[in-house]
Length: 440
Ligand code: URA
Image (cartoon, rainbow, N blue to C red; front, side):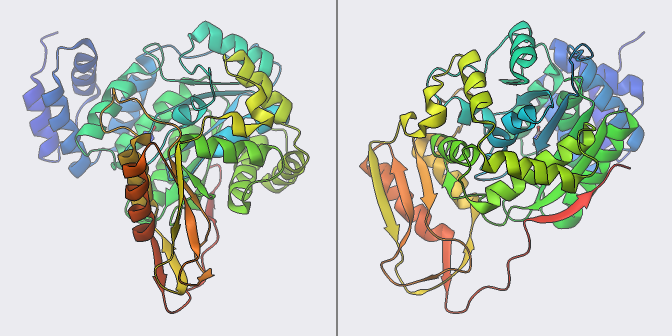
């Protein structure tokens, strides 16, 4: 077949035309082999960002993403394989809680996660805050941890959905992340390659999410649930609030400590609520609970009793980490400088803005400006207030954990900006779980 010109394909999309499966295969396949350079793919991604994709185009891109690597076969496992994916937020450490919890309750969780992106942090960076923990497993190692422990957690490799890995890095660098078809193909492409039978999606709504409004988030959730279900994977979604960070800790190691406290039966209520809501959905999708409510009840009970702690310790040990951390989170290295940010006036906490806090962690060295940057897992914030709280001048707003004195001062400034104070209490805070998009 004569090869099609990438510039003609870009031109068609830029003008709002529909690309045929052959054209998509040509351009995305060529990108994987290096025949289509980054600059042409970046132009095409921007055209898709503005023009969108038809359902047929999206279906083809999803297929190409899944087929670009290996698809796991979990049919030999003695229980259902179910996973969750979040569209990314600040302070969101639910994966560290729900993965061992869901495994403790009978599911197999083959979790392939990402690293921090923009203002959001990634599960892999949080896991690597545990001394020795390896997220760079081979597929063989991943399979054997999953078989033995019921849960395995690793990063994307060249073996699974490599097209997404390459596209994701380019999208991050070209501001083309917030596109519904590109997000749907990216998320489902890597999750469906896990060979799972159920998937719950946590689609964030609010100022800390990637998409600008609730309508867009709902559209993304519906696009993904219908694509997933159409391919025989039972897929449901929750729309959840990301107007404030989840929990109190923001920053990789601090978040891991908070997640471990939650696994042991403590932790902030919003983190418990979201982790158990998602686990409840997973149990229901895997056929281990008759409805999500029963699933949530069982998840909450197990969490309160700390039943998933030994499983988390096994997971950490099998992936090379120090398992003592699970019952002694203080063994996670802490930052050399720790100070408190205090309120400069009295008033009510009207908002805690997730985006400045997320970027604050990046600036303090706890995130990446470039893909190759090494993150400092020790830095970040532990909030002392929630929206709606009354504070007096001089009261603590939160702790700042930094690598040096400059970082501490920077962190204090970020905290004071992110925690907005006003003379009136804010309107009632909407519930964390805004909407459920069931199987359809
Ligand atoms: N998370 C993903 O895996 N992909 C996206 O495109 C956005 C968030």
